[in-house]
Image (cartoon, rainbow, N blue to C red):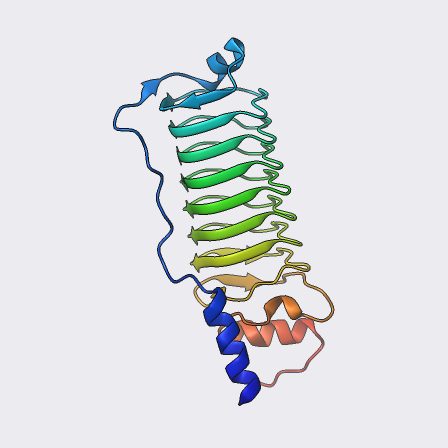
Length: 230
């Protein structure tokens, strides 16, 4: 009973208790493109409205982008290393295989986006929501998440190793063949999500303080070599 109470307390301390703060966009946005900003040598952008841009494999590193909306844009394979995004909305964008290593995201939202194979190594997410987005085979190794919400996202094959997370909310997501190696998942509720064939350390401490369905708990037990009778 004491152990059960401690686990519940740990879950409660790390579980989200408030909604993710949404992006705060300016009332008027100025049409433009990241390509034009890069050509001008600009390092900061505020109030940008970018629609239907295709940038190929462009380089947009070390920028500061705030109060912006990106709609139906394709930045597949682009490099956003160390770029800072504040109050930014991404809608129906293709960010497949893009690099966001050491990037920062504050009050950002992704809706209907494709981030397959994207790299977010050592990135920071604060007040970020992701909805109906593909994150399969993406990498979040050593990234930091605080007040993050994932709804109906596919993280099949994603690498979420050695992350730091607090107040992360999940709903109807897919974690198949994903890696949580050395990531403490306390406070995360997987009960509405698919959790299959995931990787973790031998001690399985990653799942201390999480909420799982009976089926999910039995599946994890089988991965540890425990025989579970139905």
